[in-house]
Length: 334
Image (cartoon, rainbow, N blue to C red; front, side, top):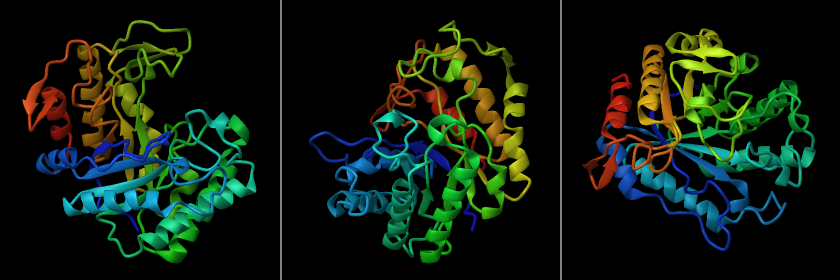
């Protein structure tokens, strides 16, 4: 069952990684109040299964930690916001440092069973919560073919099995599947599942991730430019539109599309970033797609991101990049 799309909002990192010696963060009520006040309605929570799992004991989650998810849902639901629950790090896979996993989601049966178990557990836990308030975003950014044993046939089978397991418990639950190759490539082979497909808003990476310490671009760092050339291709509004054409083709099959992550790192000059973001969000509005910015505060957000040349305005207790906020608000479809 497809939900009431589009939705607009932000990713929050309250349980993004296992907190050494501590607990996950509590829901940020001030931030959620800001979202509700300014007409946003989407909160994506990328989680790390290690937060509630002891070692590789995947099948006995710590209920005290899962209770944080319950409270996140209470806080978002009370404000009329939709919570998208995501496994950013799943048993056997994460786009960040997958090599630290004991098992491999693409080759090991125990990891695949653990993945399906977790989503079945969440389906039972949240059965009856209306889709207006909750969706399951199964796996953040599957990899490229050939990486750690991944291929699209294996991915397809795991996702089909897990969707079926969720629907056996809660047939109407809204489910989201990320595109492959880090979320960038459409997945027409899964169009028949009647789930939402989630893309990414990071191309060209030379703009969105300029200066990022965790990513090394082909040919090394160069000046961030937009419009401009990267990796043998000239990027402008037309090429952005062409980049998303495979997603449009899947949409034509009756699939709802949402951009689960997008944004620009703070090392890109603000004038370059805003030219690119204006084209990108203009295309999302043209297509009628919702989006979730990565993130609300900090280096990718709208609050004190620190991009060179940005100017901030005091708003509801935050130092906000007001032109950026206005661009997001103007990119919604009422």
